[in-house]
Image (cartoon, rainbow, N blue to C red):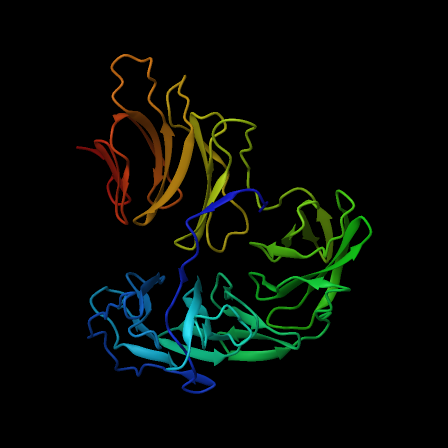
Length: 435
C-alpha cells in the first residue's frame, strides 16, 4: 500500500484510562468446563474508567468485551455464541498506581491481542517511565505480560496462531497458540546505532515469521536490507538488498515502515518522502525488488476534482478502498482478513451522466460499509431543493448496491446501524428503503 491516501475508519484503538500492573508477571485465567454464560454484561463509561470495546469473534454471536470500570483494572467478558449471556467479569490486570494513556486491540482467527501503555504521571509528557502491558485472549482465557518491549500495537496472524507483542534490542515477545507468551532472543538483528543503521519495527507475516528492513544511509541514496526469520523464530537472516536514490542533497536517516498481507511480499515505505515506495517479492526461494504493487490495489489518482482513493481500515478487521475517477462513478475494492490481495476493482455507476460530485466519504454501518458521494445542488437548475448524493453500500464487503438521491436538504445521518440520506435509508440487514 502506498503513501498519500487518507485512511478512514481507524483501528479498534482504546484510549484506556486504566492503570495496570501485574497480578503476576505472567497469568492465565482459564474457565472451567462447567462455567456458564449466566451473567449480564457490565457496562463502563469514560467518566470513571474506559468504555467497553467489543471484538466480534468467529463463532456465531460470540464477542469479547474489554473495558475498565475505574481506570485501574482491565476487565474482559466473553459472550455466548448464541448471544444469550456473558461470562463473569474478569479483571485480567490491575494496578492502582499507573494510568493508561494508549491501548490498541488487534484480532485474528479467534485471538485478541492488546498492547496498553501506562504512565505513573499523566501530567508529565516525559515517557521514559511508561510501561507497556500485553494481554492475549483466546478460548475463554487471557494471558498477560509486563514490559513486552517497544510497541504501540500488537500484530496477530490471520489464523490467530501467532501474535507479536513488542521487542527490544535484545529480544522479541511473541505469543503462540501452543506455547503461550515467549521471549525470543534476537539473532541477526543489527541493533539501534542510528548513526549507522535504522532498523524498521518488526512486522509479523501471515505465516508467523518476522520481517525487519534495515536502512543504511549513503550520499544521495539509501540501502535497504531485508531480514527474515522462519515462522515463530527470531533468528534473522538477510534475504535481499536494494539501493534507492534520494531526491535532493539533504541527508536522511533512511528509516522505513512496512506492511504486508502475504508471506511472499513486503511493502517498504521510506519515511523520507524523497525516496519512493517499493516492494520486496519472493519468487521461489529468492527475494527480488519491484516498484509494482503486488497487493492488487488499484489507486484512483485524479489531478483535479473528485476523488482520489481513500482507505478505511479495520472494517470488521477488513479494509475498503474507494474513490471516483470522474466525480460520477465510484470504484470500490476490499481486502478481507487472511487474503493476500485486494479484490478486483468494481466500478459502479453511482450518479447520472453530467453529475459533478465533489466529496467522497465512507462509513461502517452495521455489518457492512457505505460510501457517500456529495453532489452539490446546481443553483441554475430550476426547482433544485438541495444537494444530491450517490450512495454505494455492501452488507458483506462482497456484494454492492447503489442509489441516487436528489433534493436532500438536511445532512445525511449515520448511526451504528443505519445510513439515512433524505427519504432513503440503508442497513446491512435490509438494504435500501424509502420512507
